[in-house]
Image (cartoon, rainbow, N blue to C red; front, side, top):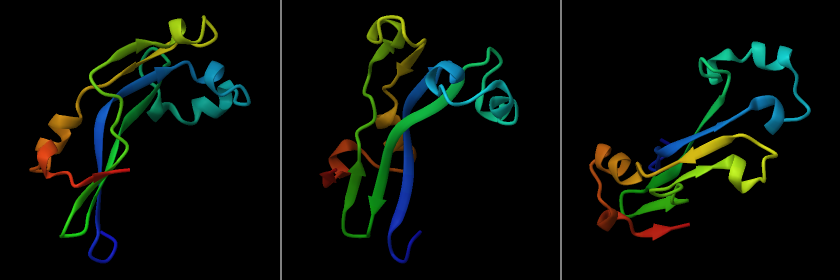
Length: 108
């Protein structure tokens, strides 16, 4: 809450990348101290989603997430990066906070 405004993160999916390839200025020591963001196979795991802003009179979404798609990053980057983007959970995340798509007044 910020005053009368409620901010809620609504997950839509997940993004996996190889941390050293994605963040070239980093090294093994940097990622070793941040193991909580890596899965058991060493992938950097990031959430993708939307920010819900509620002010009592309206519900606004900032970003619509990734949608019901799954993409292989290797194909998109011609092999420069490994990973994936998997979306499609935004409607379920809205439902978890008691809303439907019809309750959204604006999208930014």
